[in-house]
Image 1 (cartoon, rainbow, N blue to C red):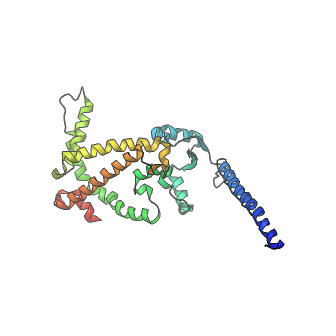
Image 2: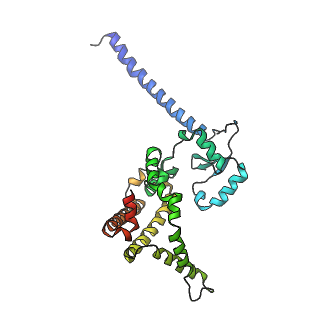
Image 3: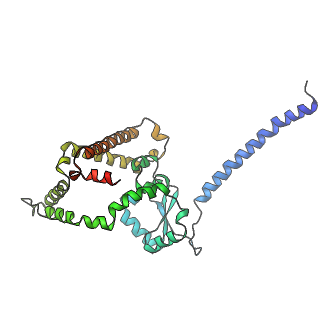
Length: 282
């Protein structure tokens, strides 16, 4: 039989600990709710302790569909100063002038990080993949070390002769009824310019068909990523949904296409393949 002291202890433990646990849980939940509520009303200030102006509407979609109008609205709102926009519940700072960038890099550039998936959700992140715009830190520097040389001033100058030839070829294209149908002349010229810049070994109808098919699929995925809020969730994207099947199909085709191009680049002479030249440079 338990002693009175032990009985009192057990009784006290069964009565008090649950109350303490419940109180702690309530306090944590309340603090989270209060934090989330206050975060929407928190004012961001500049170096002069002045509130940074905020564009009131959600810009998640209109930044892509009405970018020019949004920029004009931001200018009307804040003039030449940076301003905040809303991406759902998140706030993002818009900097758009050279002096903004100078100030950003001069002071606290290292204190900022790139938002995961550009704040567009998991589905958009799958579409973006490991693009330079998604990367940060050492991975970003590594990617830039490979990409920057191809876009340097020296590399650009080396392409001037080739671009000049392609422009001449494009402008020499003539359609029978170009005055009545100028759009046909432009389309024909663009097609000629593209095909003229690709080696004969790459002018494969299957290749162009694959690219066209993937482009149509890519447009559907972009539409889903931007307009369907459900696919922002990583957990939703694990379910066997139509959106997941769409993404899986694109990823499979994209991988196969790139592997085929790498295989082709290794098989043909380097003088006929720009892809191989790039692989060698890496």
